[in-house]
Each structure stands twice: as C-alpha cells, then as structure tokens.
Image 1 (tube, rainbow, N blue to C red):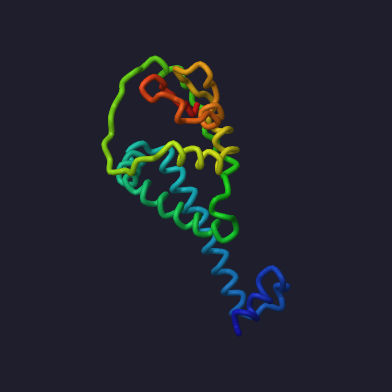
Image 2 (cartoon, rainbow, N blue to C red):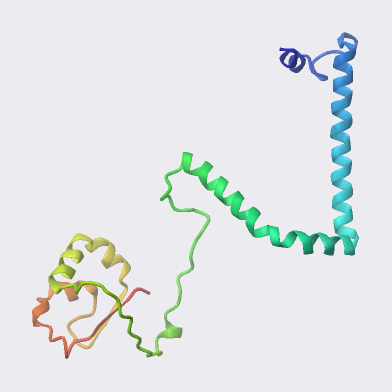
Length: 176
C-alpha cells in the first residue's frame, strides 16, 4: 500500500514542498544509487578498455563462460518466441547461401554404408513421387543418367520403371 502511494507521489510528480521527509529520503537514496551505478559502469568500461592487464585477465577468466551463457540466452529466448510464433516459421534474418556443386563434380569416390533398412521397391518410389511431386520437382534441379531419355526427375518416375534395365541404367539425383 505504501509502495503504491509512493509510486503515485514519486520524486518527479510532486512539488518538493509537498514531499514528506520519508519520501524525500527515498527519492534521494534512489537517485544516489542510480548515480553510483552509472559511475561504476563507466569506471568498469574505461578500465576494461584502457588497462590491458585487466582486459586480459577478464577475457581469460570469462571466455569459458561465453558458450554456456549464450546457450541459456538462446534457450530462454526460443521459449519466449515460441509462445508468439509458430515453431516452424522460417527466420527471415537467416539465409543459407546456395552452395556450388562444381568443386565436387569431378570427385568420384564411392562409399558403401551398410544398414538394416528394408528394401524399397520401384512402385513405392513412384507412389512417393506422386504424393510429393511439387516439392520433389522443385528441389531436384538436375538428374544425370546413362539413359538419354531421362533428363529431369519427372522422366524417371513417369517411365515404367520395369523397362529400365538396372544393370545398364544409372541415375544420379543432384540436389544442387
């Protein structure tokens, strides 16, 4: 109750003559505290920018805290932002530059990864293509094949796949 009355009758809203001694002391103490914080902040700023040994000491001892502090800030900000924005919304300030494919174009190093995946049939691939045709056609920029009738991704799936001889036809789908 006293705080509410004091906020209404703060230093700037009341003439000096109408203030009580308690209000005057509180206003003065607050002003002195704010002034002290400003002077302390300026002193620390000047000390860190001018005195090299202090700068080195602070950087050496605070450097390992940078990543954990930024991680906490990111965690808290993502939680706050997810309340107002859909989590899958794209970040308008973050763009990934299109990568050039030419540096790795002439590198032919095959590698084999063995996993326990089930075999995918040609019919399953065709069905997947039909369901996601717009996205796949947009994202697959180039298709290379030993079969000259195949130049885009649509050509691969609109052919009857059983007519493509697996031992004679090789198809590479390059995303870039």
